[in-house]
Image 1 (tube, rainbow, N blue to C red):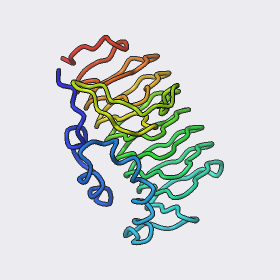
Image 2 (image 1 turned 180 degrees about the vertical axis):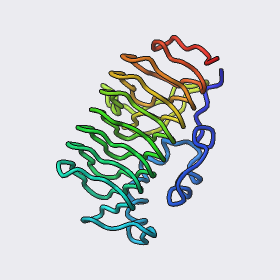
Image 3 (image 1 turned 120 degrees about the horizontal axis):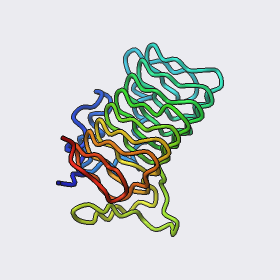
Length: 220
């Protein structure tokens, strides 16, 4: 089972306003240091149909934001998204359309493509989540190693990222069960599902079921 980690291998499509960023980065973690600047450039240029609702917060059409949600800039929320009560968007966040950012969930320095769901008590930091990716209730993207050293992506080979903070890299259709911990620099392949209460580490192939940290079976 191949452990794919390149941007073009993990994501089949992006919103038009994200396409230049994705095409310029061979590996998805290379986008993380660029997110803030990229958002500020988009806000300055504007996106047709999007409205600036507060300082450096640009929002698409038909977005539902509950009164108790907090959104700090720079942030772009795509059309038809829902930001539920108590959500905390700490800035440097950009989403595609149709996403759900759930109650008491916290986001910072991350990208969500179209129809991502992080519906309940999630932490998504320094991460990239692909189209229709989903994290179950209480799933945490741990983005900093206990020793504070740069994150190494452990796939078929080791990738020295040079970055101290990388959370989860979830491909299109990845689905992580409730209460799981995505350790720093974990990559989950396309359409791979993860059992609840799993501690994830390393690179997981596409089209698999992860039953435990090192127990992976091919989906049939």
